[in-house]
Image (cartoon, rainbow, N blue to C red; front, side):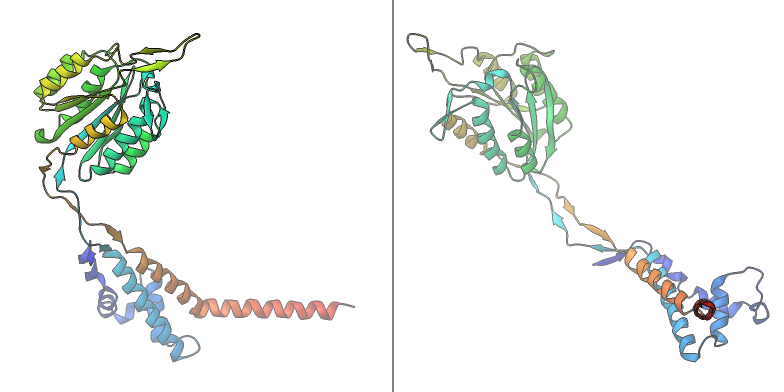
Length: 349
């Protein structure tokens, strides 16, 4: 539908007629204030030009120009059909460990050996795609924690930024406490029932300014539930000079602290030793019950004022071409060019 932002501007439409009727006729020939508009109106009333037909056309152009300008002044705009934003969902932050240990190749993906981070990108990416109706945010942490994506309904952007994240860009160590602290800062202003953090790591907090347990207590005060995931295989075969040996690549995983963080905030700790287990954990997280939020609608608005404004400009150019002064000037110029051409031809030997 079309709406007018300044509809009272339409009251100016009869202004030229009021001026024409109210200004005394004696003052129309030489007005104290020289305005081209009145001069044109006077010339139209006298039938200037090649005849009454040209005078009528110019008068019609003036009417259309003024009407188009008044229409542009009313600021017409096209309002599309309302678009309903999601009415349910959660504010869900995903904190993903991208420290150097996430490059360990102890995972299997599609039958081939893969790094932990590659599996996380694939599984978490699918999880993001399924969370339609949630506001999702992405926090990446290593030695430092930083917000990669603020809370948004744009799931494609969240997944793309996660997929494009290189290993170790935030540093080689693990600051779990800083990641939780940053999450609290981003979620504390959101409705209490919808504050959720899903934290995935494969190590132990060994750097940072905030202790993970203290950060979890602060999160509990703000009503933020934290679901922690400990990721990494328990066994990995390492080739040696004479023989192979089996090691535990997840020996440094701090299960106790991750469990305590989840318990303090009302969440759950889960252990993922393979890509299949990690996928099942995120599928279980899909069972989170959504909450009702205030209905939000959005109606796209497109300004239309420039259409009548452009139309008025075109009419102004056309009006100028039909003006008798311009016509006379163009005729004289053409005649002068022709006369000079004949003189040059006559002067030529």
